[in-house]
Image 1 (spheres, helix red, strand yellow):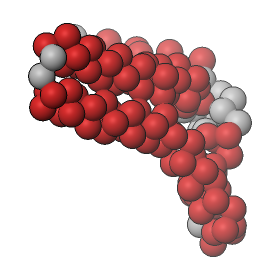
Image 2 (cartoon, rainbow, N blue to C red):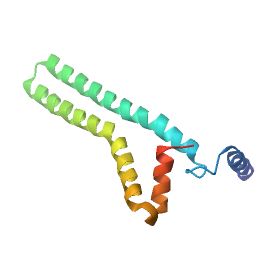
Image 3 (cartoon, rainbow, N blue to C red):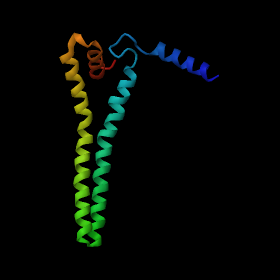
Length: 122
């Protein structure tokens, strides 16, 4: 029964997805990841990291313990650095693969297709 349902799902996807584009039928998945998942991760995780670091620092300041304040400050700085890295990692990875695809040219058509698919999902 499960294999029958899976076959029907594959048939539906096969008829509704444009396989002629640069993504070979995976354009919908690329759009979901690029326009839905990555922005949530790119914005949400840094906000959460900074808010948690600020809460830790606030607790340490309220406790009036100098050692705890210094530890919380170092945690906040580390979390801010991690937030910046998370924010820019998507851009860096996209730029890297685009550059590799452009440099490789005809020698690596798979990379060029991936680059075209990532930049212009249809």
